[in-house]
Length: 529
Image 1 (cartoon, helix red, strand yellow):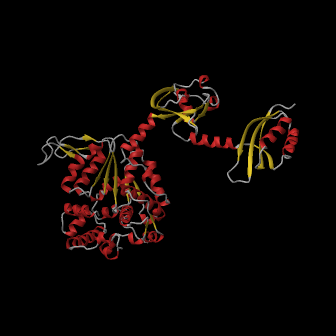
Image 2 (spheres, rainbow, N blue to C red):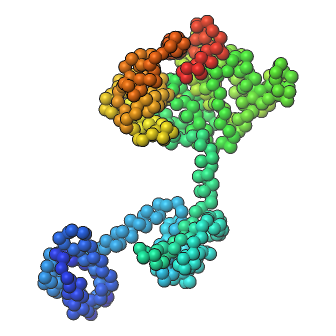
Image 3 (cartoon, rainbow, N blue to C red):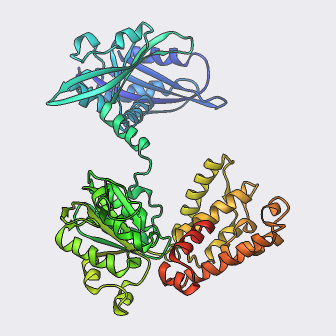
């Protein structure tokens, strides 16, 4: 007699009564024991599949006879040996899902036998699923748990636990729940183990929503992939990085992601060099001592280099630095120290410096508008961020990203752009890049009352002045019936935009317009330019 072996069968019938009895009768004649049976009878189907796992000492030759006898059953349409039961496939899929979860999961049946143990639970408890599953809890050296109480209907929520396993100490919160069937009977219990370290990380991400990573940079085009890869590669070094790109391409987002990736303990401190009046720039960057000038803090003030500590100082629009601050910045880079305005001693600084500009520093250097020695100091590793027109493959992704954000914020139903609206976006030159796209999509989300945004709601800046004449009745009230102050404001806004698009810098633009630097900054803020 051959040694005992397990075989699996799939029998297909046209559904009728008495099938199971007929199968059991034939198998018993050959001394075949049925270990498990699964019936798959989809509603309304003409056929039913019966899957069997049997234990037999029959030889392969005997199995030919067994299958031959089974095929004599009335209404049998197919009979074959199989390697895997549907139940095994489902269990394997479930295990893959459970192993992908970051929480530890343990479950028992109503006999207190361990039925589920995922990968994280194995790590925490030091017990393998292969040795544990199927055995009673009392035989397993599991850490303290409430699974037995869960079988009695007990419910334990976020109970703190500590476990020392394999030289590692785990701190986690345990939640135990009874498993009930459709009749409300308790048929098992499950315990979920949440790692406290991961909980703290998630809490930190929520508490510090402004913390940006490279995953916040939306897009997957080849033009964007290269600068991201380079930035990730050098983020953990101390190399001075110069971010180059047009206005609105996302240079500050890159800088924040580099800071996050660097792992530096200090803060990310940013300053737009064009947004600070020249007479205040030095005191903002380097700080000042008490009594330095009228209106100053009596205790003095730390500058941004000191505030950044061991973190990152981001100098945006560095091309706008006047000659005096340029010379002082060069000295900081050479000596690694600063001197506060009105101070007489050197203060060491430990922050990493990142710079950015939308202007052509090489041309400025050749015209004598930017120090040559400072240029070579900050241009060690330039990273060029592509304009939107060079990464138009990312346009659909960016539109979906901004629409989702604005619909959520405005509490509006989900919106999408019509093909005609997309075509209008594709044919625009995008001088304002991602920032301009964000403004256009926000404007469209606000103005469109439909779930589908058409081309009439896609308004570029140069169209806003005449939008009131062609907007439909639903949105016409937003821009129509303009009075003189509004018309004058629109005209001033257009003139300012045209001047700024010449990309000569904030200070030079202010001189050409015949207004002060501060006045121009106020108007830029007023019109959202």
